[in-house]
Image (cartoon, helix red, strand yellow):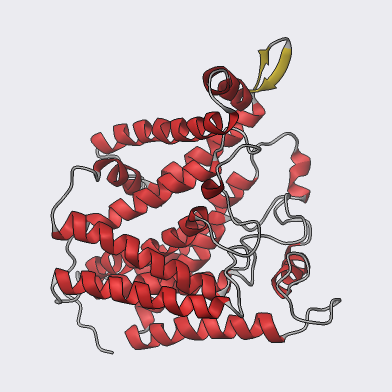
Length: 377
């Protein structure tokens, strides 16, 4: 397939969808009380998909979609690939370091280095960004499409055929699958403390996450063609529905699973991302309906910044203790109890805390946006 791209033009829905995704990340990562969370705001316990399980792959998709717009602008001015590659490498390193900073909070003592979690959300974003950016610079649409599907089939084969050492057979169980075994082999004690034996952003499962980013990048390239906006919208809806349909069949033999980032999960979340993004594109860019977009544009304009700062502040809330009813409690507990749990049902209080946390950061980002301060990572 040959796609001729046109000069870059601003697409509002890119920022809207990015901001919507980041707002969702902050919302689901900051429950007031983790014992009281609405099912839609929790990840699937293992197999299956909830609305929360869509958020991370949505971000990888929209990150990929933005790459053709960001890179083409520079490449059209005659910038050689060398500086672009250095920029890709530096951004990748910065994202990894920021991820490690997040993983180190809250710091109680310096012994945390012995069990510091090495994988993480920003680390996975960094790896996916690095891989798909280089693929954009050095390969075409056909090659990128082949690589995306090759990754999915290769990962399926690896997970279903290769016997797990010490177990003797391939499986999809939490602690005994091949991805978990590789995490223990490579990272040892440096995995997520709540799982202990594997990491939800583990090494092997990052491979299909690259495909999530590639499908987004192919969408971005499609958006930059000379096809009409209606044609672009219809095609996104059609391919989105087709991806979801295929994923349903694949789910029968390779179940939807965010922690393993299974191939069926990649197709399903890509299909859903196409439907959601096509809706944003149709409303904001085709029909020109912008009255609802401003909060999400504000979040999307400083996406990594607001995610990083919100995670750090959440960690700080666990480090500060204040008196409450004769006892010393974490600042988060103090805020949750004093502002929400005192008059709402626990599950509603937990949600109210999450929403308030999102609105707090929306206010901070609004100030930056109004002053045209955009922190580029």
